[in-house]
Image (cartoon, rainbow, N blue to C red; front, side, top):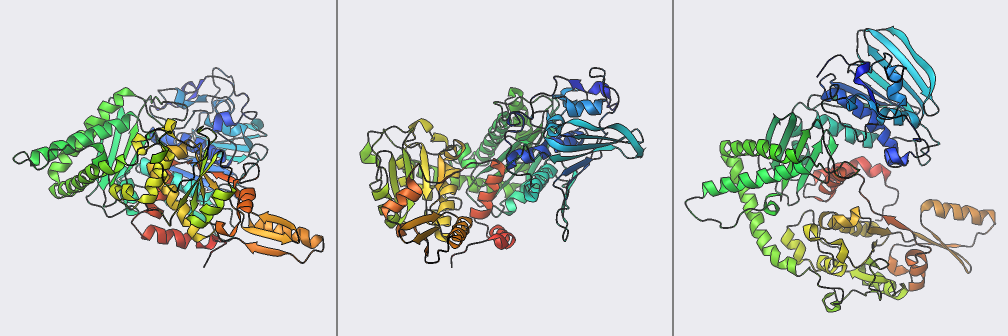
Length: 640
């Protein structure tokens, strides 16, 4: 790798076109997720300098006007005239799509980022953008406005011995019509993750928007992935072993891996390539699993070679229970499957990761017999539970759509067998179930009432899950199986709608159901099949005129309208339960496709979703207490 980062380092692939016209092509969407994507793109450029060992500090500031400033102490973007564009390299990087050092393997051996179009796209979608570069003992400035138009040509504004780049951008409200307000916690979570994945990096976040209190965090983790595993297991359960950690390099591919078991039952396997969370896995995950299964079976066989303690081999299903692992690799030329860069496809990675992790784990087990004993005991319990659960699982398998006798007795099924139009309401209690059955359109709407709260699957062993009647009813009614056996072609309903009371108990049942779907039928969420019904909170009656309010704001607006009409004799009813509505009201407010409100459940960040499930639904109480303490002030309605 060469240190002379100059104009020749930047390769231009094509001009910047149509970004403002079709921003979704470049940042996914212009909602809050797309807004924060601008931060990730500029931050990724700073991280590239870290990966190349030219920077060790990054600072992100949310300014008072909702602009963002990202500063690094790297080499500074080159400012010389670029040989192809005939303008400064700095201008080229911020005005030409696909112009950047990550397209030149001599400049960055490893680079992150999602598309490599970051700087120019952020400029195109900003109302104002400023770049300050410190290099060659000089301090340079350049400014753009109105989506990439030059406001101030590059100029020297002072002398300095420092090096680095600072980018300030203000998103254009004409593009981001939904919101231009940045979330401190969203950025905080991401930079903390980056600090874990880049050991030694100091990365900080400052929020200057509050005149009374400046918020700030600074992260630096010198043990990298090892620290990350310890952090995750704080909220999951009681650790059973010290963190097994190994790192190595083979064929220019750097591998970092950490593993720790806890007394919980859920698996937490996270993978990254060049700082990108590959939540769909890939060859680095495959190599990891291959090594772990091989080495744990070899170790168990060797310590029991004189007596046949267990004839069964450990499978990955046995091994993963209670495991927290992180595999992070840095690859000079990663290849991904699909457009979202969430599954690594490089075939050579599997063997390299398997070798590095396998050799390290073999040594760890031999050198730490007490830890090895705890791990083996945990896996043995999982193996026995798997064998017992195998029989219970058979009862959850749906045969064919025609086998109606196998469906739950309390299911009021719909008439159509066309899954593309069929929908099922999972309803809280027999009372609401009765109203829903009477009020539905039985041609395409099925009703499955639940008795009480279902099991919290985040705390329960798999065997207990399969023995739970309510969960079995859900699995059997949907007909598509669970986990690795899930088959979306067998799903009997296109929409699975959770309909619970608008109170604390209803919210609890909702989250229990969502936890079950996320852990056992994640495909339903990822494919957009899960919805949450939105029953009204209020009924406002003025004589024969009835109106429903779905929020406090709607209620206040309607009260103001009545006041303006000098109407004072009206009745407000606060609905606590679905059973308070008669079938006609339930149909017209909550079940009629023409008038109802449904929230589609989706996962924007699988990594964060895993953590939230662990923290809020797992065995460890302290994370929930902390969450309540930090968020209690935001509660608006609390049923007592």
